Structure formats: structure tokens, C-alpha cells
Amino acid sequence: MGTSTSNPGQKGGTPLIPSWLNDNSFDPQPQSPDRFSVPRGDFTRFINDNRSGNGGRSGHLSRATSHYVRNTLGGSSNATVRLGAARRSTAQMFSVFNSIIIHGVAESQRLFRLGDIIGKKAADALLMIGKFICPDGGSTDEGIARDSYIEAIIAMPELQDKSIEDLSPPEFLAFTEHYMSRVIEDRLINDIGNKCFSLPDSVAQIDEIQRQLAGFISGAVSDAVAKLNVDISRINSSQASEIVDSIYKKSYDLLTGIEE
Image 1 (cartoon, rainbow, N blue to C red):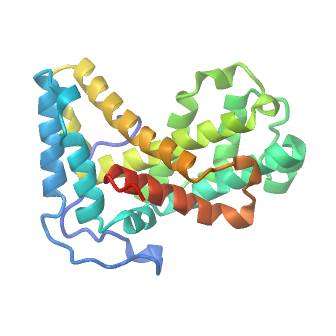
Image 2 (cartoon, rainbow, N blue to C red):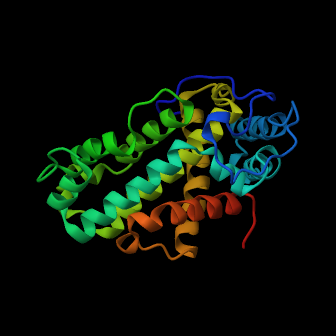
Image 3 (tube, one colour):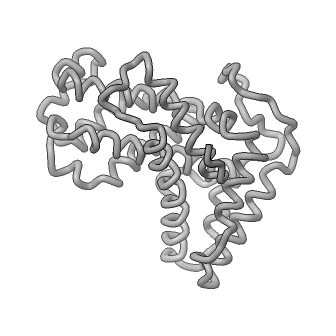
């Protein structure tokens, strides 16, 4: 599953929001020691359905994500806060991309101290921008932010064929959607435990399971962006954090089946 390190998942005693995050918008919920067990069970059944050839007809994936958000994390607002560094990185991404669209590469390079990205291939320039958006750090959510950023570049091979100056606003938004989808996916896998996804007998089955999970999450993110009428060319630095949180929250709502 990408470049994430192998882990058995979060334990019931692990705080949902780390003490160092210091975010007052988190709503404390009673923390059951087995709060991760139900979504893990549904994911295991989803995987077993794939092994038996019934993956496309299984409702276990939607039930697992719904229970994970609603009951394990205490709702979409808490799930959003739990993303930690990835929220900040996404807001910085919106700010940088908006600046490039409105003010150009040269001015944005100077403003955000991005290094020499002028004339670079989009993929190479985005890697350099990533050092500003997702700086090195040791916490899990910082690792998720960096991993998701690299995976977003990999997901768009067309970035190798044009310069950073040639990227259009829809392409910047598409990259951001890839990133946000991967953040949600990586956070979920880290919580549930990516050892759950090693149950299938073949690499092809693992790839198919990842494809279904990624598609399910990316669909929610794309729908959230559409429902919120997000226009990346109109989002400045002062608006970025609020809009980012709105997109993540709406995405989590959609993953639980809530159509607000």
C-alpha cells in the first residue's frame, strides 16, 4: 500500500487526537478499548469477499468506512482534526497553487522560497514544492502527508510531459484531490492496520483491493469538491484552512453515507 510502513494498526488505548496536536475543535468521545475492532472486522470481510470473487457485490467496505468515521473517530469533524499535519499541508498546497495561478511561478517561487522551479517539469517542480508543503518530521501524520504527496505525483504521469508553468487550474485541483484522497486512505490504513491488507493470496488481489478502496475514497473527495464548488484559483492563504477542513469534513460525511 504505497510507501507506508507496515503496522498492525492503532490500539484501543491510543488517543484519537495526540496531546501535542492541541486542537480545541476536537470533540472528546468515550474511547472504548475495542473501538477499532468492528471496522477491522468489516475490512477483513471485504477482503475475504474479494478472495471469493464477490468484491464488487460486497457492502462491507462502505460499512467499514462508515463505522470507522462515525463510531471509532466520533464523526467527520473529529476525523478531520485527526489528520493533523496533513490538514496544514493541504492548506499550504492550496495557497501555493493559488499563488502560481494568480501571480505566476517566478513570484510564487520568491514568495514561498520554493527554490528554482522556473521552467522545470511539473513533476520535478512539485517535488521541490513538496519540501515546503510537507517538511521532514517524525510524527505519523507528517509521514502520511509526505507519502500522500509523492503518491499524488505518481498518480498523474502527465506531469512529466509539461512544465509547471503549463499546468492549468483544473490540473492543480486534480493534484490536490489526489493528495487529499491519499491522506484519508493512508490515515485509515494506519488506524486499521495495513496487515489487514496482506491477507489475500496474490499481489493481483492486493492490487484490486487497493484499487477499490482508493476509488471509493477518491470518489468521496471528488464529490465533496464538486458539492462545495471549490475553485482553486479563488482560494487565497486566508481562506485555505477553512476550505480544506470543509472538504475533508464533507468527504468523511460522504464516506459515512451522510448527504448533507
